[in-house]
Image (cartoon, rainbow, N blue to C red):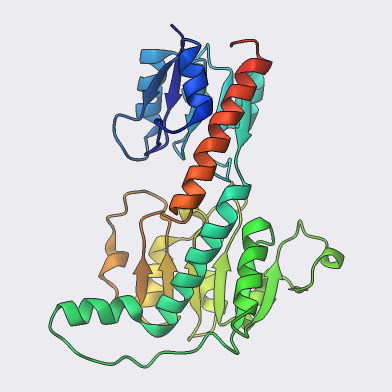
Amino acid sequence: MSALLITTSSFNTSANPALQELAAKGYKIITNPHNRRLTEDEAVELFTKYDPVGMIAGVEPLTRRALERAPKLRVIARCGTGLDNVDLDAARDLGKAVYHTPDATSQPVAELTIGLILAALRHITLADREIRNQKWQARMGNLLQGKCVGLIGGGRIGLKVADLVSGFGASILIHDPMVDATQLTYQLVGLDDLLTRADIVSLHIPYNETTHQLINQERLSRMKSTAILINTARGGLVNEAALYEALKHNRIGGAALDVFEHEPYKGPLVELDNLVVTAHMGSYAAEARTAMELEAARLLLHGLEKADFT
């Protein structure tokens, strides 16, 4: 019996027609036994144990080393938007088709971005913690209206954030070398220009060698002392040690992070009051999650049919 591996940390297998069809065809469906993001070694272990022909992937590192341990694997359906965790060159060399589900994540990630912006501006999470600790203190915050929001990345999610932010009466700057300015209704600027002008800097770009720790000590120093950094994209985009120093010494006004370079995060950033944190849940809205899971399973079925595995 051929195996199908679902490595994303959670997945509803019971109400998914494409998975049910695959199961009826005799495929054995194996889910993530750890219920969290897998390490590379854990992915290797599962590949070695089950040697699947197809998989629905999460954000675990699918490196060449890992993919080489799955010789029968022909189809990878990534449940999510980014493919930076997949070695696409290795997948191509090894004959493994790769699909993803970018559309379903745009709205939930954009909405969480807005939530984090508002939480940071109005000190919502700090006030919540203080009241729970018997401290009643009204915190003076700031409005989103009238602020300049700088979006690093002008793709699906970045533009959705721009549209939502505009409804609050904020102005928009976008930095994205891959975007044609004539196709935008918003102002396209260079990175340094964005960092120095924006009251809020929000990241919406893929993670790769070029963007690794794009936000470092030097770039943080270019931001306003009152500026807020938002990251709902990938943890590796931010140098967390530099961000810690910038927040600790009030060199920027605050930050809100949904992603970290190593997850679950257990570092010193959580000690700071001017930081809002969430647990990599940008796309984790029920409606969007259902849509992503259904689409990933359909893509897996399609890929297996195309490879004559069904």
